[in-house]
Amino acid sequence: MNKNLLKACILGIAISFAGCKDDVTDPDTGGGEPVESRAFISLTASIPDAAGTAGNGGTMAYALTHDQAVDQNFSVNIYQNGFGLRSARTARVQASENGAELYNIQYTGEDGGVFNKYLVKGASNYMDTGNELDLSDIIGTSPRWTKASENIGIGVHLTGSTTVTEGSAPNHVYKYTRGKVRIAVIDLKNARVPNSTEFDFPLSTDLEAQGYSVGRIDVPVLNDDQSKIFIGCNVSKIDPNKLSYDESGNPTWANDADNRSIGTATLVVDYPSLQNPKVLYSSVSKTNNHSYRTMTQYVGTDGHIYQATATGGKDILRISKSTNDYDNGYHFDLDQALGLSGTNIQAFRYIKDGIGIVLYNVGGNGGYIALVDLNAKTATKISSDYEATLNFRQYQNIAVGADHVYVPLTPEGEAGRLYVINWKTKEVIKGAILTGQTGSSYIGSY
Image 1 (cartoon, rainbow, N blue to C red):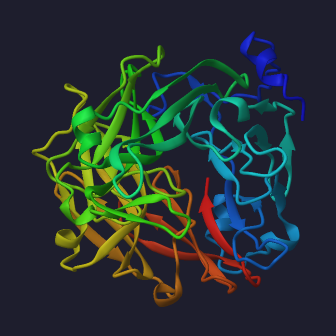
Image 2 (tube, rainbow, N blue to C red):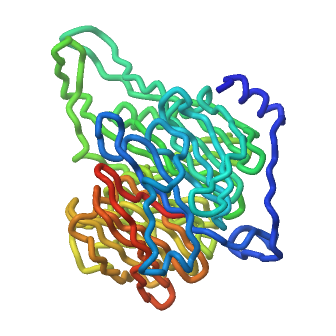
């Protein structure tokens, strides 16, 4: 991979690939421009690495039609008949709204940080467009990134997090822990970087002195008028007054998460300038919102941003369209909506008109599905045949097409089914057979 490619792309040298367009307008993808109608649903699955570590060896993809998806006799063996996406480890995959294009930034390895784009042609036929873009110099070789809006990707990375102290043993004085934020805007249509930036994470000096720091950022999303980017944060806290030393003589401080007083935190920057960074705090939740592999922030039909505190929380929060700050009068509690305790949202997808779908566990166990009404603050559990043995930790995406959502369900190493759910009627179709393979499982649909 030519590391000078990024510089060329920033200068505007890019190859553009365009598919044939139907005269179809999607009201949810931005203002009446014609888009391709959905022809395929791509499924993805993770495979083990050479050492046999489950889900750590790469990503396979397979595209099927809606008719195939709902056919209980149609079988998909993605491991033998699928297409291997480029990545040394599990790929970070995104897609166009209509599923016609897949986007991937390779995760770790020799080409970690390299963007690739594929055209979806059906079954294992994914056409590599050759639109490569090396982002490693900006956001590292294992970046976190999302399709933050149609045709716009945002890559983020928190790097160089360092603890600064004064004095010497046995009387070190804690000052702060701080890293640098890196952000890259990715033009998904033309494979170029229109803008990027780097700055110190803007936590206040008072909070830093109390032992707060941010160690990871993820799941960036553009707001409704595309004036700001909202980025989830992993906040941690130590007690600056509880000093000890490790075996190497380095100073350490006791974890103080139980005394956290600040709420769920979101980093905000202006778009497209990437200027004026600041941090928003919720007053109704203290659970982190940086997710793990799945996008957990979406712009709703009403223009507000709905944000799940995944992958360890039960909350869906709202950022107001009018104020671009947390609406602390809004709080969706999955425990309350389902009449349970100990639920943890592991994946979330906003669908339309206040309706969404969540994948969750209970007390860290099992894998369950619910349709949620974010306006009424209610939830309807969708039963599956695999609940006790599912693990959604690596789940990345849930495809939506018209009235249906597509949820592949396979316990690790076992066969399963593609569940096709009508989000309006709540009808559930146990669709195509998904074959299993040791150390592997399906992790998303697009």
